[in-house]
Amino acid sequence: MAETEQPSGSSPEDEASDATAGIAFMIPKKEISTVPDMGKWKRSQAYADYMGFILTLNESVKGKKFTCEYKVSQTVEKLLDLLATLDQWINETPPIDQPSRFGNKAFRTWFSKLDQEADVLVAAILPADKAAAASEIAVYLKESVGNPTRIDYGTGHEAAFAAFLCCLCKVGALRVDDQLAIVFKVFDRYLSVMRKLQKTYRMEPAGSQGVWGLDDFQFLPFIWGSSQFVDHPTLEPRHFINERVVNEHHQEYMFLECIKFINEMKTGPFAEHSNQLWNISAVPSWSKVNQGLIKMYKAECLEKFPVIQHFRFGSLLSIQPVTP
Image (cartoon, rainbow, N blue to C red):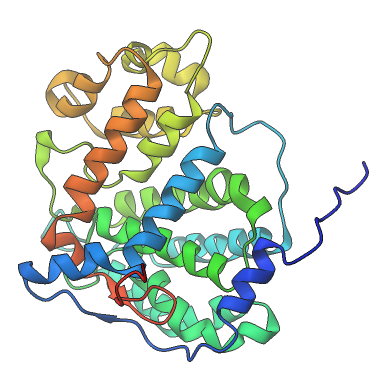
């Protein structure tokens, strides 16, 4: 197959590298310490970049199955190796016997390995001229797997992984033509490792709204997963509560993978344990579901102080206001 010709001038990845060329990388830190600080977050370059990243990926997966053809770059392969390493560490760190059923303390042992190795793991992914960014980007990786003190996991940790991927795009390690692989390969593999962590160490949901939340642990796969279904000829939102549909199609659609995991983990009527999702199944079209979930994500995750107080800002995801 002939390679597509690059238009003359700088490509998006060149621009990404140029944008970070003169940057002094730094260890990201928390900047949102009170509720009134939330205005700073909403006006920040970090918010614009993060939301832009989520919406770009939402657009790129629209109407596409996992099984469609897309490019898998060397950086994507390296990210899958990194996630395989995290998975292997779970196998090497079995849960310990303890009186409490939830929050197995072996998670802290697992986490300490990541804490020690994160910089090296991230450096292996970066282009040589961006090696200095490893310590900054590694912070988002460490933040993305749950809290070792509380042994919990929630949408703030998931957001840290999206921020990690966004930073890799900003330094030019991931490129425009990696978009499908970012969601279908990397993020999907991340979800499988997180589900294994949640099950193995019986992690608590962080800041869970219980039956009124969308899901105990995740949000982004429902957004991107609903986008995959836009304009589907036969499968409508009402079908995802049908277990046969889920079992037949979960290997093609991220949304159904999430539903399958919920069905495995929870007992009782779906309408009772996952009321929000049950309500969503009554929405007439997937594009309406997708738009509604984006609004809900902003309101329930990105505009909630308990989530954003933990978000970290550095040179790549900056607290500085967007320049008009």
